[in-house]
Image (tube, rainbow, N blue to C red; front, side):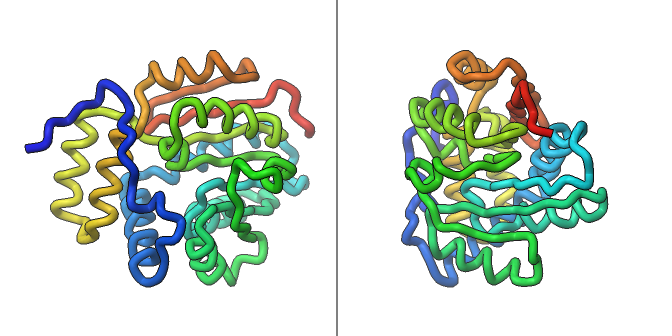
Length: 242
């Protein structure tokens, strides 16, 4: 049995880190990962973070939201439904470096006139030139090394007018074992199983997030643990452009 070491973040790469992954295999894996996230309540964490940042924003104002590492855009479609139920006017942009994932997102979102997609590297000058009210980072941050995370979040802080919502994994032995058991019953996808376990080992402990926070701009950082083994990190701008 593999020894589970959660003392530090692993450098092991995930299959989904390959931006050339495409076709039916990619589509099925993205769908399965979205289902896992939905079953475990993960998207609710992101939406609650958006709700926090919008609490002082007039509902007649159009709010721009970008999701980096958006995959097939499932969270954007859920945000659209939430926004309509609550009277918000939202313009949503999905950003991913995998052009094949973006094509799936466009196809699945063709009936959503408030959602658009762009194939961009988030470290590119083209992306850095963009601004949004809120930037989402849902299960994306753990794909980067520590030094990249600091640079990325500092960059996103300047690009976001209201704030950033981060939703990512808590690195723990219990989470690893429970996910193994969950997959044995509910997940019949080798990539989703393997990448899910690696993702947990690439995830974070509260001490990691506290270390990052010290190196970032802004004073309002809300970090909370959520079920199932997630951290919600809301970085709120001090001066909001209402």
